[in-house]
Length: 501
Figure 1 (cartoon, rainbow, N blue to C red):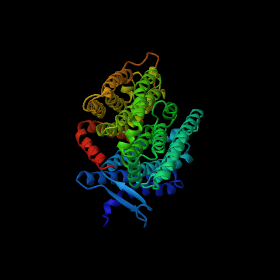
Figure 2 (tube, one colour):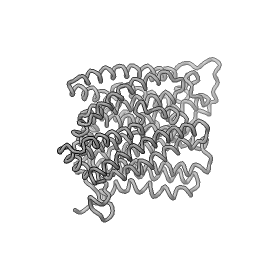
Figure 3 (cartoon, rainbow, N blue to C red):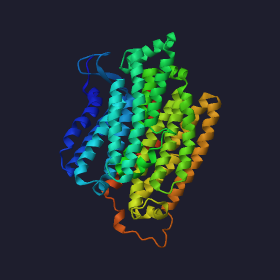
Figure 4 (tube, helix red, strand yellow):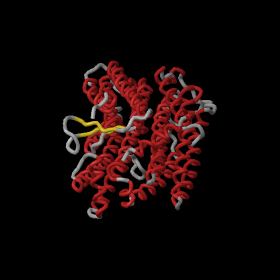
């Protein structure tokens, strides 16, 4: 089969940031930042081109790496779902970098800024590899690169709290990685393959004969639990508040939006392509995920209400939102998976905007993140105030925004099951949405209340620069577009899931 030039885009999206990361380490900070921004911009543009090509009717395909065909060689596989996910991930990475650029000078020593750009490029390469790879061991290798890069993103500020947060993060995530690797080893043992499609065929045969039933259940449990720990599903979320709350604005935006979603996307890919949804149902893991997700949706929101610090509040809100995504996966139906994928996009685009906006609002309030000091911050930093309000409304589920469409899709997917799960989902959705409303609208009202009489804020502190405002405006526009053009995205996800297996 003759390959066309555009079919090399996925490979370019992985190799470009990976190769350029090595060069970045020797650059001067200012050049390194411009270079990293340029490379991530190129990846975003390439992902956009690939998405448009698939949207206009191109078929999904596999791309052979090197000279060895399957089942020995390594493969990349691209389709509409991969291209769309890569576009969302690279766009959020780019906007998070631009939005947090001004604070890098304040938070990092000059000699560390080039290394910070290296980490962001490695993170971009790892995310792209997670999305496109068709080889489960390659997925594990890049999963580890992503874990180490994320640990570095937290620890880079070198304050006591961030080092503790990074240590917590690494301990939890290495346990997750270990379980995932054990799952792969067992899977290789019973299937004899590492390429996803070949494992999928072997697993279907094994499941049909009924042999290796226990090992197969163990494999599914190990891989699922490993990735759940890494993506912070309740009750494995204890590292989240510190990791997101104390790191730099760009780090918080990247960690909350991208790292956990990369792991979730990999889990969905494994469920469809490696194990098969029918086998997943037989193991019963979806029921376990479903229960933990429902508890997480409520507990994450309750913890968020109890916070007095805006960034920790957003961090706990992430725990609830990850619960939403796992609830869709736990339904185990195509409609549930579609709703989970849509919410994955909507949350990725929304959460980084909330973290960046919260940073801007804190800057305009004497660098305080406590609600009492944030009164009136919406007037002192208008762009951040509007962006935070749009993000908060989306999370609550306001019509015409991504969050509303996601919740609507979850409700529809639950109704389709026609059993007790439908009632549970609708009940927990109602409770969780009410709790979301309490803490997000309380924050928005605080931002527009009159400041305390005693409070005086230096005016220049609120200025975060053109790039910060531009990044927030882009985020706000994309969030509104996601709500308005949701049908296009939904049909792309549905098409992608049907060709995903």
